[in-house]
Image 1 (cartoon, rainbow, N blue to C red):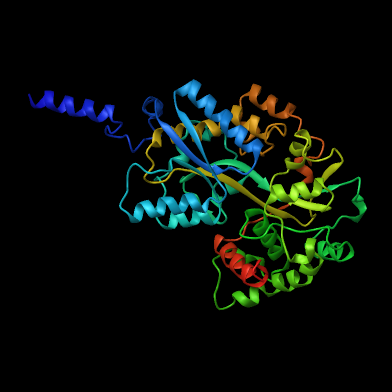
Image 2 (tube, rainbow, N blue to C red; image 1 turned 60 degrees about the vertical axis):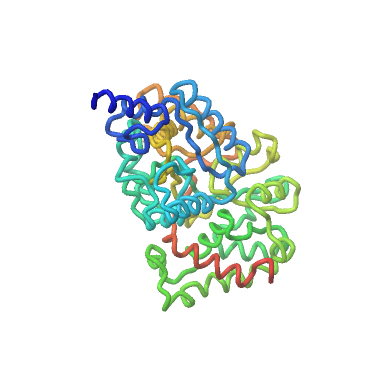
Length: 408
């Protein structure tokens, strides 16, 4: 009788999706993960500000549904911090199961904050994914550290990023292009109103601040550790001296700023700006393919280096559909999904995989991929500057807003 009651309770729990393990999953037992994921709905919280990225996520969702019976709902964010805030609020309320966020597109300060607050599923699950064996851990160390913070398998790499500048060669000569932050300041002074950047805390705008900081700070090694309150003002003085000189020569004299990268891209297309930038080396080619930028747009970088990093997906500690989230993270890491993502006609986001580790057919497919007319080849992207510790972004954003925010 006791056994019968136990079976009845287990059956009832299963029908409610509350069976043992419904809120946990072991990536080391992959067949069980696949079986458990079937029928789950994964709420994937990811930035929703670009049509091509949204379309890619929709494609991935369609594949997950047809292959594994997993439904993917793209929760479109304008700021990843909102997803982190949701999980933090749930933890504060004692909601350690049935969380609203199953998978989140993340890196930088948001990962650092979620790791610090114990908001991430773990221990190490990312390195146990079946497709982890293809990840380029040898040549891309940022797949293991996120803005200097060790990932410890708490997030799975999704794509690479490198800061690249764009210009329209129909209006700007290649010989006139700046080759450093210092050159860019001189260029802006000679071409007033033709350059700007999105207002922080927009990610692209904040990245510009970090690029300049990395070039002008007296000791770059300081950026690899948290801010030292005692020396912060001195450390960032060269950055704000630079911005004080640059601001009067920006678009609208720095009284207004582009809303985001998409707005900046439109201003290049409309002829309002002559130089813009993005964190995707294939962004210009992708925009040309989509008819968003003219075919005369090209890319360039600073020979001394530009920021480079990796972006990831992570699972909150209280995610409802952990098995489905693991399955989606693994699919996003597959050679098929990575190849499609790197195609500039789809997205153009660089792969995190090592071509040498791929099966011959997959490696050949990557090698045949046309990167696009405006995409610099990998050997022309220049050195990658390390991202500063997340603490720096938070502090320089706050100081920037105080000095140059719209209220001023």
